[in-house]
Image (spheres, rainbow, N blue to C red):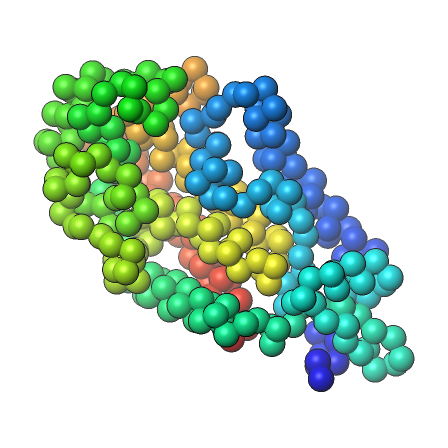
Length: 298
């Protein structure tokens, strides 16, 4: 028997409807421009990544869910019962409300949640590393022909020979498997680490831009249990990181308004590290909220 909804905050239809509308307005500021570009057949080298690599559809991002610790009253709340994770719960006065029910998770789903909690906890407890300077993006174009480039509609700031010299002159210290797997074949032996998917819980660290961007991935992979506001917070964080990630890349995106971070210079490396440290600090409360959600679901 589900717990009484009165043991959790119960939102009136007006209250949760206002939150639902506010979430959609916020998210449409990101999804509408993306969908307009897609309708025109335009590609964006910075922002498309958030909808292609992170395969969470714009419609899903716009969808509001309350999370497991809020009950929803009102007739419209019954729409949530279309999902198997939601239950009707008694209010104790003859009325009912609708609430997400963690006990509805399958054994496989619970196993994933436990794995994710352990990954996030290990990452949170590991010292942050700030010495990679964004060279992963350079390793992804190292000794590649122009037609092979992922964003070949945009120019590079240096010739292929100059890029090779920059990559070979500095140690590459990428700890993130999902960045490392996109290295060109000749770049992979240059990395101090050879991360694998299985080693992620041992290697993920808070200074890594991609590990922090992935907080968005973990937030939406926990959906629909994740409060929509948390997913949006993680998306906004990932969007800010992606801008820095591509500004520090070898691509010249000034025509899009992205001034390069010249990590090939001492000043540029210092600027990149300042951003890394800022993102590491900003990511901590988001990671803590995701860990707490995992604990709640378990």
